[in-house]
Image (cartoon, rainbow, N blue to C red; front, side, top):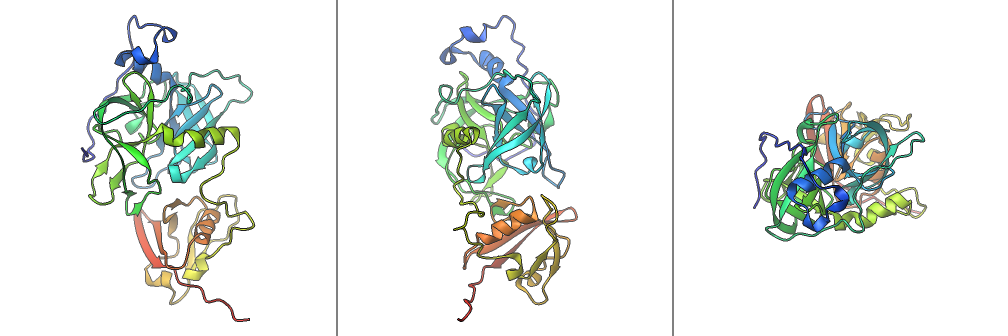
Amino acid sequence: MFHVKKFAMNLAVVAAIAGAMPESAVAAGTRSSAQTIDFVLPRMVKIFGAGGLQGLAAFGSGFLVSKQGHIVTVWSHVLDANEVIVVLNDGRRFTATVLGAEPQLELAVLKIVANDQELDLPYFDLTTGIGSASEGTRVLGFSNMFKVATGDEAVSVLHGVVAAKTKLKTRRGTFEIPYDGAVYVVDAITNNSGAAGGLLATREGKLLGMIGREVRNAETNTWLNYSIPIAELTTAIEEIISGNFRSQRQPLDEPEAELRYSPVDFGIVMVSDVLFRTPAYVNALVEGSAAQNTKLQPDDLVLFVNDDLVQSVRDLSAAFGRLEAGDTLRLVVRRDDQLLTFEMRVPRKVQPQE
């Protein structure tokens, strides 16, 4: 069952459980819903970072997967900053850096900057704490939707049911998202502003999935409430933490990775790349070019190239370098307070004659 997204009143459940059993005395398979909430909340974090564009919130959710402060969250624009702020359940605030990411899985792993503090945080064990669910399984969704929690307030908790486990084609705005693996479709309004990166758990406290971004079904145009199963993410999470991660996409700085196209091939002249993260603004357009014919304009800020989030001129050049002849180039840009989409056909390059 798919739910049309609506801005309903947030159901904030605070874990004030009188006489609850100590955590160590409760086996994961025997916890009540109240005990599960009490167990999960200390392992959730609120994330505050980049945002400000129309419809793009500057806050999100995440959950701890190590006592040293490794955080799993969704890969999104919120992380488009050198450092982000994370707030623990007890109200403590830390900066965190992006340790690694895999956009193909919508996954990012953060690491709290502790400044030589010895952290011993509650966390989810990825080796023993993962569960599975079938249609009809009752679940709990934990997230900081609508920025309800900013300090030591508890994140929000929603009760729901797994409607299906399936593969979906989804999109955000006018572009499709890269993840096309299995998801839990949830009969609860979990995918709200700020909820992305939150946690879906069984009523007994087993990890089920990471709450995804606000997206629509690409075929039916309905908003989807979904989570990516933790089992789909575990290997990448562990490899990122250990430093052995290799993205599914070949890094462009490797010698064998050839930059096939550049913005100039479409008549787009970008601003000079003078900073570590120079914003991807269009500087000028070549007269009579494909880009000019699409009504792209100077000073447009490029946010996405096809499925790739663009954080800088360097990111944009890398995304253009991955294009192949015959592809459709799709740019999402910000112009004033609007998000606009432009499409161009990728031409076949003429090989120079020897």
